[in-house]
Image (cartoon, one colour):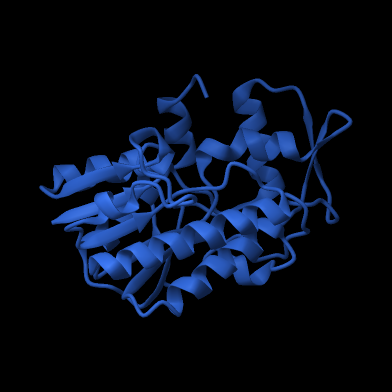
Length: 250
């Protein structure tokens, strides 16, 4: 089965392509680097010819509110139109756990808009909502740093390895459309400030982690359960400690 992966040369996309290929599918890595740009429409018609499913794991290069909204709305409209023309029967999109619980966040609002376009498109679909990736932990800590201290909200946090996210996305792409969503999260749940206190110690990072109820997560204050999946979520296999042991350079 031909499956086109939009964003197929990125962190998650490259892993999804590898897993689909291992399962015997014709997985196409589609991204600006391979001549396919969903934002401009370049190369979409050719890439989607003969495709049975499309997986969208692309991401905006900017997290500025207007720019991220423009990216997800425009690229999704272009992609859905090309899929309809090509007769694609399954659209799979990667989103974020908690989008509807923090709509004041610009990135989350853009993902909500993307999902609404998908749901109204008439194309059978599946949405995979994932928690934060281990690979982005340093970026989260850096974003939360104020005067040399890492201010983190003391809320629940359940990060996941990119490998586990890719496994979940690939499994969904190979199956029948859900016409709904699944949630995926890491195997362990933490209090967010405790996770980063442990992580910074493991990195040898001297910054102090401050539990701050007013701390913002990329511009918004998360609630107790904003960033964690609900009951019935699929859990990854890789713990943060095991992931860190495999990725010491990170």
